[in-house]
Length: 186
Image (tube, rainbow, N blue to C red; front, side, top):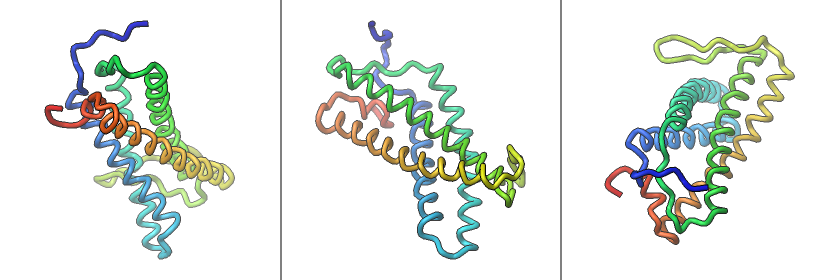
């Protein structure tokens, strides 16, 4: 099957902005999540970090929804002809897994906090909030917490694989794949 013809060899400025904005926010959220769960001892500080994590999660959802919608409509740059078929398949699988895991983390986090016995809704800028999705249910909240934490470690592994692949294309293959997502002239 032939690839779709395209004259573009770079992602658009919109694609680059959405990619790097989501990437920065998700990396921050992963670090924040690890810090608040594993390293912060002070309960007041931990509570504040949880509230920040929840609010930023709502922003991640908005940006990822925009990005997913944009990606369904945007045409990807043509991959280099030198790229082996197995790498093309793996690339697509990793991208689908990244999107799927990010949305799975958002859903499990939302259900976890909604089902918490302490049902504090997600605060939004301007004083608004996201209503809880379900009634308090300790068991459900704990199940979602366990999934949310497991998904985080799988997401970290996939992000590392994604970064390693980008660096391989830049340093070893020198085929322009990484440059297609970097701002500038490429």
